[in-house]
Image 1: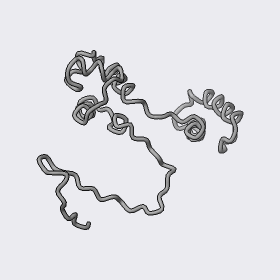
Image 2: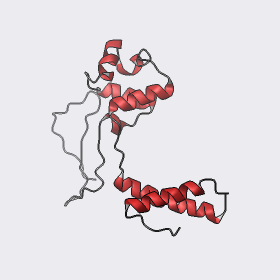
Image 3: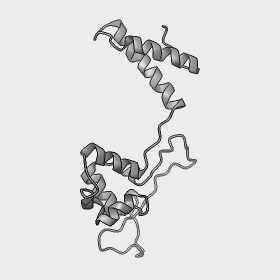
Image 4: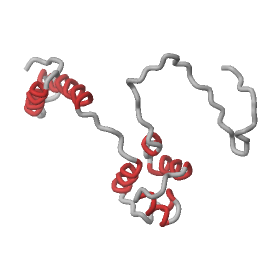
Length: 151
């Protein structure tokens, strides 16, 4: 099969059949090289036509619990009391900053998922200047007006 950009569903299906045939290719052979190339083409087509979104925070927490074989009782150290754990997992309580921090540090869950941050890679901005934010340190006041030094 000639490697080419996949443009139709029929080409995609044919490419998948060829990939299946090549799955047992011996290392360092032309068949393995063809498999690698076809794999990249299939991956590119799937990203465009079958995108997979981010999981919800609850799905991510449940996945981490399943992978680490944790119970709701084990989650108290990350989410607080047993009632808070139950409320978070049922979607009745939002995650606090403290909970998010503990889940990121303790279970390795991505903060982007817990904060439900979407990736907008196709958005372009007319004025791409980076924003300058001043974040209050512990004990500092947010309302205090101070001059921000220019970078």
